[in-house]
Amino acid sequence: GDYMERKHVKFARGMVPSKFEKLPSGQVKVYVNDAEYGIFDTVLMAVGRTGLAGQLNLKAAGLDFIESNGKVKVNEADQTSVPHIYAIGDVIDGMPELTPVAVQAGRLLVRRLFGGATKIMDYTDVATAVFTPIEYGAVGYGEEEAIKKLGKENIKVYHTIAAPLEWNLSSERA
Image (cartoon, rainbow, N blue to C red; front, side, top):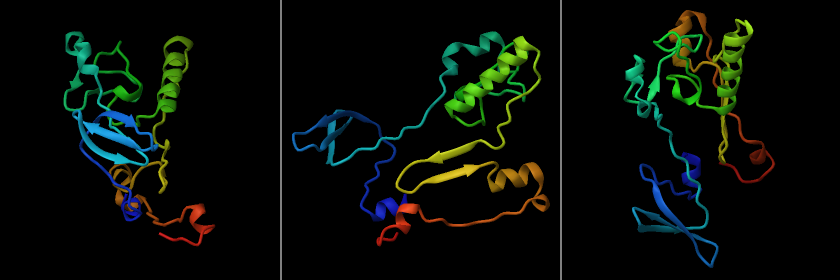
């Protein structure tokens, strides 16, 4: 974000546009709460997600539901607090919100429930990436989580900074 702001990218946080209008110039007029917010050459919108599991009246089924984030807790086998109710994907608390991860968890759950398999989803080394002018990627535990799960004496932490390939091919630097 810092790099992008130095390159005059304007960030508008904590608001949700209500309308976009393409102008004859090719620019985009952005409205917030139906009032004009500004005119921009390019608009990139990133919004967070909130689980809507609370709308399913899960408490009526005896299921523990986390009202603050709209998610449910599951054990390592994707079981909720009610043993015959399972959950996968974005609705589960503390797991990556990534479609391929949910698909794989679903496949494994179906194989366990109906095919006699025993393999459970391993969320440890799920790769994540953010594709912006400054790419970010991670695989495995973050430092704090690794210390919590494995103990500080059992981990080694390495830090590095890598410049995007396009920067190495260009005379312009960050």
